[in-house]
Structures are given as structure tokens and as C-alpha cells.
Length: 215
Image 1 (cartoon, one colour):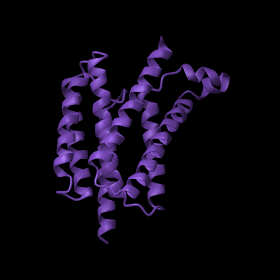
Image 2: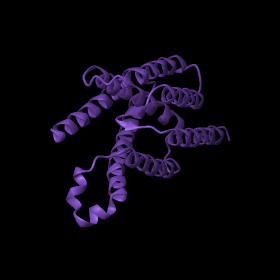
Image 3: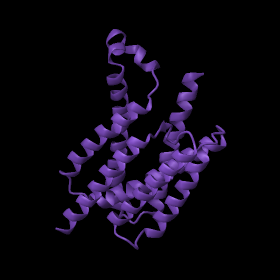
Image 4: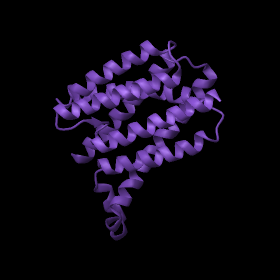
């Protein structure tokens, strides 16, 4: 039963990101060549995140892993594993983005559209099929963010759009945390300290990219 539930969750996540990629192809402003390169890089980033979640789970349960490596499969990937995975992914992304010839802000803006769409599809499934009432507030926030993103597209620069979405998302999640017990992103609970760290780090990086582009 646990394995079935886990497989269904993974299947829904894959389906959600597939929808996100389709929306990017339909609504994105990338050329065919750019789209191919960016989609490959997005998939690479997501695969890295999944791998790092497992690495984080091993690190956090290292004594158990040493005694019996296979039992680590039975341990759920908690929020702490997710936080470590985001940290490792961010470090790897910073390194890669300093080497590649892609426009980092355009890439992040395109990836943001995929993430917003995938998040909405995933939370919608949680609300409808799993009757998760706490997903409703986050669904409303994602709807506002998605519409805001579409409105800002081609009207503002990539960096400005990302900063606005990041700010509204952070404030929205913080508001939800004040009126309900928890907020989850793809099944992982978001805590205020992680939210604050994510906002400050993301905001600083986007500002750095904007200044680097302008120089």
C-alpha cells in the first residue's frame, strides 16, 4: 500500500511537470533551438534534485545506511532531505550557470513557468483526488502567480518578472503559514526559516544576474 501510494505520487509529479513543459512550449517565447536546449537543462536540473533528495536522505540517516543500506529505501524523504537537495542543486546550478553561454535570467523565467504550472497541476490533484483541504489556499496563490506571470511576460524584463513572482510567492506562503498549520510544495512542508533563506538567496542571485547583464 505504501509502495503504491509512493508510485502514484511520483507518477502525479511526472505528469505535472509534463504539463508544465507543454505549457512552456505553447506559451513560451523561446525559439525552437532555445526551447530544446532549455528543456534539456530543466530536465537535468530536476533529475539532479531527485538524486540530491536521496543523497540528503542518506546523509540524515547515515548510521542506518551504514548498518543496512537497503533499509534506507523504507525511510520517507522528509522536508530536511528536500532542503538539503535544494541547497546542493543551487550550488550546482550556480557553478554551471557561471560556465554556460545561456541567458541565465531567460532560463530561470522559462523554468519558473514550468514550476508554476507543474505546482498547480500537482496541488489540484491533491485537492481533488486526495481531498487535501490545505492545498486550496496554495492553489489560489499559484493561480494568482500564474496569471501575474502571463501578464508580465513581454511587458517586463526577465529579472523583474522573477523578482516580482518570488516576492509575491514568499509573502503568499508566509500568509498561508499564519492561517493554516502547514504549506507543502510537491509534498514537502515549507518552514518559515527555509522560506526566508530561499527568498534572500534567490533575490540576491537575481539582482546579481541583472547587474551582470547590464555591465
